[in-house]
Image (cartoon, rainbow, N blue to C red):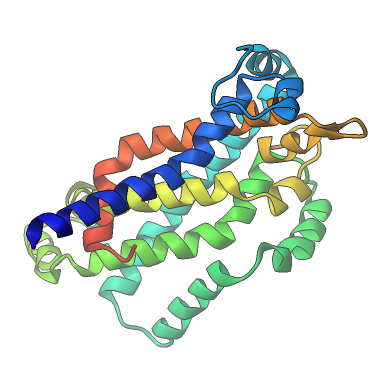
Length: 270
């Protein structure tokens, strides 16, 4: 009985991997074709292999600046999200105070709220403060969604750390900053890696706020990609190349935190 079950599991995994990888393969395949070949025929491999689509992205300032802008505000958002979420998650994990459960639930509702709800308030606020079309503006806007997520993940990891570690450190004469940075943070580095991954990915793929709050100087790649639509039609080849390049940062982040993500699914609230 074990062998047929193993075979079924293997077949299921193969089918799943094919369906998961096929869209990515097809996008990469299209990125090395011309628009004429994409629209003319169905081919598993490019008949006329070309790097022209990638060359356009790396030589056109409006294209490659979109990637730079996205990386800047995503990095700022990820760092600030973790700096804010770490002490907040510790407070929810270690202390009981009036309205703590209600406040925790309110934080999570911000993660559930559609970005369009916050669009008009952010637009009016940033216009008044002169923050429109800046990397900092987008990074701060994404904090509304990423800080609650990071707090939720980190609180799950912190709750799994015995309180006796805190008490022992205080008895040994550790100040709170020293204890938190040298003892507690290393114990939850898996949770920090998981939280950083999700903050990075959610900020990287968010379109509505990033597109509305920027125009030229901080325009993200997701907004630049809409340039492929014109009166003459869709520039499928360039769009495929740009889409392929947007996968690279996420793949790099996954590579660095791959071990922490596995632990996060096993230990934390992921």
